[in-house]
Image 1 (cartoon, rainbow, N blue to C red):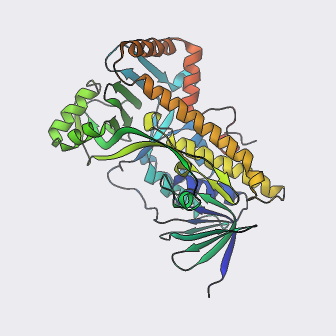
Image 2 (cartoon, rainbow, N blue to C red; image 1 turned 135 degrees about the horizontal axis):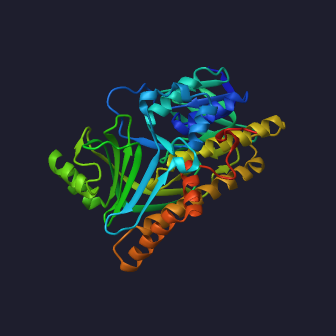
Image 3 (cartoon, rainbow, N blue to C red; image 1 turned 135 degrees about the vertical axis):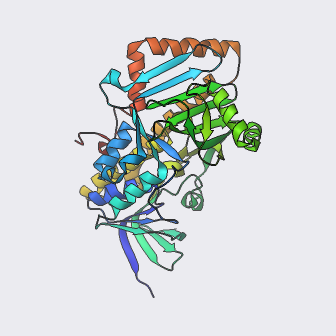
Length: 406
């Protein structure tokens, strides 16, 4: 009979958020295990379709975790500017990092590249055990620990279980945590494209009656990742188009800002849904990343919100450990839960308001968004506030997301 391995923290899910949490905890001397149903792989060749707009706070987190050097420089695409405009009016807003003496607003990076860099860093830490290609089969919660049974027959116990296993979290379902669920009735089409004109290290987003279309600059001057949010009916129409017809439709939807567009990859689509867990924590349990919340990809903030979860968990759990307290006792986790729920709800509300403002062709709504966009664009203090949000600068940033971690 196999013996039970004992850890301080067990993390289910070896994606970006799970690995970031594990590395941060291990760096604090906390014994942690990551259980991942898949495995990370080095990124090479054509860019992957799923990318994230990593803001400066998330970049600082990855740097403080010691994983930034593992990101291949050729796969990191810093962007200095951001342009947002309404296709059917004169409303627009431009952001420029140089106005705040910053070198860039953030970086577009493939999700797989981030996960691989974090996995490479995780392999250096003696306090971190990484179990890949293995699923969690059973969970039982005791008074002092969580008991885990894996599909390879192993048994583990930990004082705290972190569920970072994605939007369709198995752990969350097993723990019967209710969800607030909102179907946006939109799907996102993602693809890699090449443009006639250089992107100029600028992230661009246009809104029309169909929905937002984002062009995210990649590591070659004429290479972009697109996220096109449209109705399910429109998705079917667009995916049914042949390559040339789709390229023409895409170029027209983007106002031809970067000239003619040509497909460099397959097209994929996925439904857009908002999820918000009723509880982010419980006895012996914390939810993180998409297991706790998913938001509209309007501003590319989903993974940044997840990284804030990771940094906050590391901060709270390491402090509890230093104080000799039980890291899995729910009474010690309530402040963490309130912190993360409030921030997630704030982001969900902001994204929903932003989406509704740009939705539809109602003349009053159009007038409000035109005036609002142009007002922000021309009012320096408010524009600076928006840029700070884009950078991820907040008053209550977790320590791991700060340049000075004190």
